[in-house]
Length: 364
Length: 219
Ligand SMILES: [Zn+2]
Image (cartoon, rainbow over all chains, first blue to last red; front, side):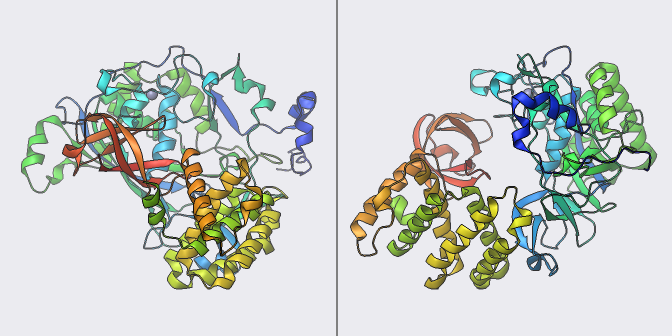
């Protein structure tokens, strides 16, 4: 700690300093950036006709993953509503930004939030399109624009990420349930006002007018708590809060399921964690994933599932059997070259957890 | 078609006038409509939580925003926005003894009207007199038409859509403006024409006020 250089003088970013004329100066003044750009694979997205929904294909994988998510740095997924502290039983705080709570007052992470963050990693390590982006159309590299299948015209082909997470007119093959906190209650944290990323000051963001890669924030050993500047108290899930959720999948290939396991941090060679919710630049939202069980329906016992009222218990795998199955699919994914190794290696450096990286100081 | 839209909204003429007054005042004071949106979001959750007491809770909330807004705002202007919103709501709504649902409706329209006034100020007509009901009605019509043109929507609103295609699994793709929406229409699928114009109801909106889901109503 003591060997670190003194933190830069806290100050609000002065917009006057960021005019193009002063760009070089202000760029030097910026602290190490809290994110990295993962470059796109050498080859453009590979579009393929997705497996349909109308039937469980006998040569594909179907089932449910049961996940336990452990909060490593304070997590806040915003509802967008600011309430009085008294509204949520805290009379000491005048105003606070809320998270979703279920009717039992348990904090909840919407399935869509989880899906979004898992998708972004999956996109980055496969030959996929750029889906959720704030970049303008002209800034998207050739062939990387969002897949827009048109079933009526027989145009069904979509990229690997769109095949399983869905696209316009295509539902996708996996579904995330809301993750619910195991315990009742919440913590209160503080979110400094985060300033908009200023791509103009980070020239590496664009290359020849096109987005240079996919942006991922580093994990840090902890989140910055109280900012020196403006900000607002937020309802959070604190370190060690545990959430559980389930993820249903159907018609996946072994590579696709294996890649999903890698993205969820289940490959010991690639120990990565998820980054969920708000405050990413200041170290918030790190969650590790544990797959606790898998309910796997294989082609041959599909029939049993349809005819039996209750599913046979034996399909639920846990412990060593589960680990073996996951590692087997992970190896299949690596061997198939479905996963882009350079991208995955680059991502590991950003999303590796645990980490000894300190949260950024000064401006974010 | 217009008049049925108006009837669905369910504001009295006096309440319409309040919506106009708030919108006009906040637009003139250059208040950020997004801040009004957040206040409306609070009121909506307060109604769920407090029911009929939500109104008084709401006015307490506005005062809390003004008092603490300095530390939470993203810009030094934010506190000014909170002051304007608090003042407008206190002056125009609080004395009227309105229930929280009515306040929610009035503010919802005020926010939409604000977006309209920002691009097209209506000058002298901005604060209609209570007694001049006819002018309020035409102005209201004009405002609603303008809103539809500027694509401001509300849940429950009926709008025209074009059926682009009917898909397997009782799904229908509609074209609204230049956007496509694919919806599951389990109950009405057989009644929906393969193409052409139909009426749909807005079932939900996204956070930015754009349409999220629609449902078939009639062909
Ligand atoms: Zn795609």
